[in-house]
Image 1 (cartoon, rainbow, N blue to C red):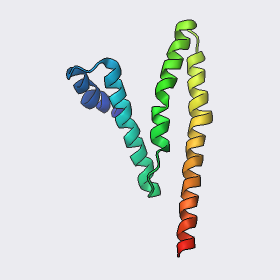
Image 2: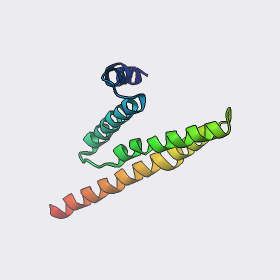
Image 3: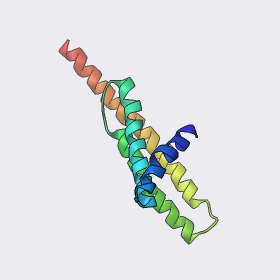
Image 4: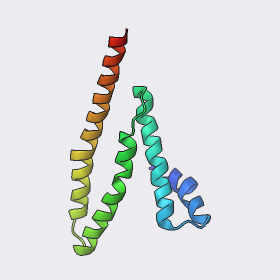
Length: 114
């Protein structure tokens, strides 16, 4: 939660005070978070790919979908179930797989060049 509080205090509120809407301020926070996630994954692998960045931005439509289902079925946990299935069953394993494949390809090219 410290990162969340930092982003709210140092990114969200300043954007909101500058006259941006709540949705625009939220998007800026999501965008910065997506960039930072990509950096955190790219540095250890020594390769810049966009999988983490795209995965983070892909959550924006997911938020809209879960809010839509919450309006249709208030009090239901269908939105939460959809989020966890997409996030844990599809999203994370796919991202790990894509980074692993890219890492193997890069490693194989380095050994072929040597």
